[in-house]
Length: 81
Image (tube, rainbow, N blue to C red; front, side, top):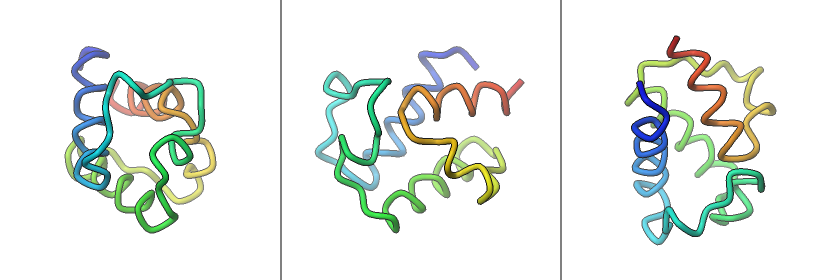
């Protein structure tokens, strides 16, 4: 999957939880939860949504690695190889 396609899937998944999100406003190097104002349940639902859409297992032990949008994209790219 190309990076732009992956980013589009991630943003689409995020918009199911936070429809007000504007792709152009997101910074890849800043904590995603803070940018979008997601609580822990929203964040969990976001990760579950990514799992369902991409068929990628995201173990709970890896949740702490996923802080920024860049972290999420890098993590998913590695898992999709």
